[in-house]
Image 1 (cartoon, helix red, strand yellow):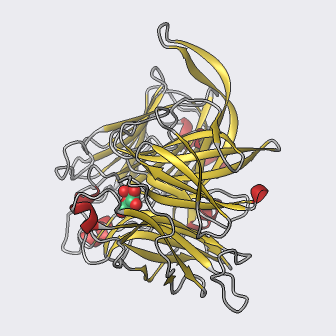
Image 2: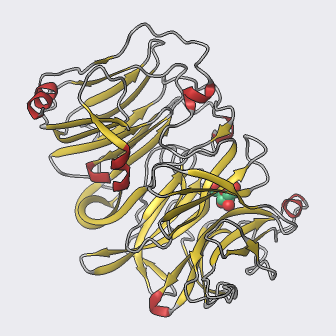
Image 3: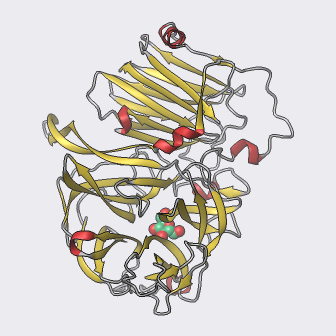
Length: 505
Ligand code: FRU
């Protein structure tokens, strides 16, 4: 089999998978089976945006999400809910939190209050506490500045039902319009809860002994890092790097992303329970693609940092051509921080580059996802759901997915520019938004001679993890008919001893 694979790769300038029999659209080709992802979470119906309150508890992963159940465009926000035992299959659950007189339920997080610091536990049951923004629409419409405040709710039955805290809101806005998206973590050294809050152009850190009384500790980000849009959905994560703890602050920002619209930047630094001190002021992106936003990590998963992002972009999220639901989540991704040599521009006037040692945030699909796929060897199979290629020479190549309508999605690499790209200029339906049909680019961040790629393909999304997750791109596409053919094109041969194709089990 190995020989077959080597031959397959060595012999090509082009690989075809020719399941290209006479395909004609038929009546069975509903919007549902054309566009409903197979291994990315979508709500059965209605609108979804940011992942919220993600937490692992007694063998179950809990995903809450920004949800408007009564329409397929953004509307009065609820927290929808889904659970999974394996991070692959999600079961949608009844809505967890409904809007109330204080406001809609905007983004936030959830923690397990093991020691019942909040006093909200009963009969020895540790409460699950959700911390979220309540957005008061009448207040906003009336031109007030106090319409975003932080509230809490608690659950004593593992997230099935929630009680809102009677003393809400627990953290009132100091009359700042953008004051939202609390992500709370337990900081063991200071024995305090730490809340990261997005405040227009910076992140504010608050601490609390009990999740109810909050005190401001510090802020970070004004005039530093990317500021093409409003800062939203922060997250503060710790990593063990060679025995030392380093921290990463994730900050989503809309617009101003590297390929337009929404995107997530990250900042590496130290955190002592009070202030976050960045190691550098470089601008770095967690994912260069246009469609990974508002990503945050699961609570209560030990040393792991597992992120899910909203797989869309505010530029067009409300108008993508799905009918019954809108938006999907990215696959869960394992984040790690690695030391590697990267170029940093030391002198913009001479544009000279210097090699420095830096910490780089890398993302890869969680290992649990491997269980979802089975290897395919037959070329008869149509589009694989996953393509893994290892140890290829860094040379120009394109992987092209296409259908009989001449629609094409291209993911490729350009060695002279040292950049990856995803070209969806002619990938299918795009008239819903002017900027959608574009080429997104991302720098290669590895200096290794050879590269490896892992590509996940679902009905309307591609996720590229290059060089062990150093460069990541996520992009949506909407073909009018499913892609039925794929090929690899390259000027030079792409010698590789390893290519594996997988389809969903
Ligand atoms: C990010 C965001 C958050 C907000 C939520 C509202 O996509 O704008 O800042 O809490 O969506 O749905």
